[in-house]
Image 1: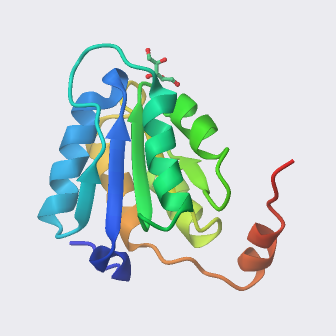
Image 2: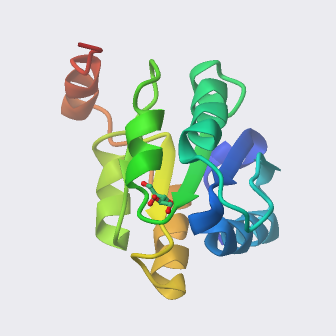
Amino acid sequence: MPTSDAKTDLWAIACDHGGLNLKNHLHSLLKKWDYQVQDLGTDKAESVDYPDFAIKVAKGVAAGEYIRGILVCGTGIGMSMTANRFESVRAALCTSAYTARMARAHNDANILCLGERVIGLGEAEDILKVFCEQEFEGDRHAKRIAKIKRG
Ligand code: RB5
């Protein structure tokens, strides 16, 4: 079970129709691991627009309402593009436990983006676990993150 301090704070999770099954599965997993998670939809299989859901989560993370976010669509690409438009959001599209580890350790990612049509369930579970547990290493990485600016 993940042991991050982030557990006491509120997380947000959302998806479009392409990420519905994986979002529901990861939501259950986070709850099982005792995280406080708000599900911001979608909760139906009907086609929706991914930016509407990415914006809800990214806005909340940027405002400090949520400590971290999870966004799932078909590829994870549209979610990450949209979320990264928001100040202080560092959304990482991860396809392996290794990229998730680096996203946290080096990039202090605060939103995890996943593609349900790209990765399998087992890989997604491993990615989520690493995203929950891995701490940011700070130091030289903090200096680099400070250089990330809106154009
Ligand atoms: C929806 O068909 C699909 O385009 C969406 O889930 C996502 O992959 C976009 O980046």
